[in-house]
Image 1 (cartoon, chains in turn green, yellow):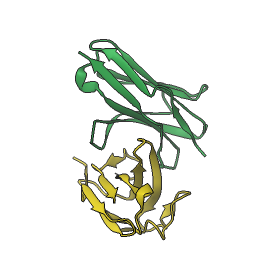
Image 2: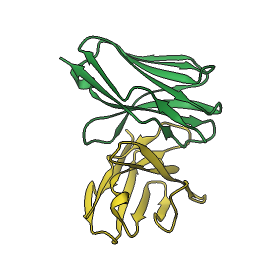
Image 3: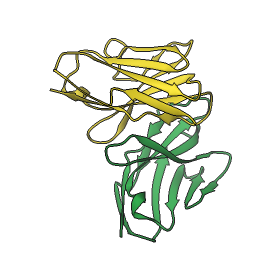
Length: 112
Length: 114
């Protein structure tokens, strides 16, 4: 079955710098890649997603890149702010299936 | 907007007892509901996928006998943890979706087992 690996378990950046979180997946049939944010003690909050028909999607300070050949996708956050601090989870699901397989999470800390 | 509510938010039960948790979708039709468990180590495990008018599909390591699920209509689902033990503790999340759209998550039910 699908496996999603999230490479950075922790990431610390200074306020205003950029942060990049990388994930890889194994199933070539995966076609939907959402990112979620979880603040301390809270549930998952949808952040941004990308489908396999594009290789880049941007929403304000967030950009997702998808490299289907390498089976890799990444979340880029520019001009980070302390409120960006949270655990970020990547996920993948195959076309026609909406079962999400999650990565293990990256604790992002933005230092003032 | 689309919202998902979960009840209760926190619950404590004695080892060997059972507890039921509920998930309610507001503002959209939850044709599919997935139940996940986030362990203390923070990883997410899919327990089961429920689609209205279809059989509920359980993932490996999870069974209907242990985690019976009801999904009677397009706005409500419930799951029971039967004979809860220490390894069942964690945050149980309900994710609901209408068709192929984005999956919305509830705030979770945090289960503590004594």
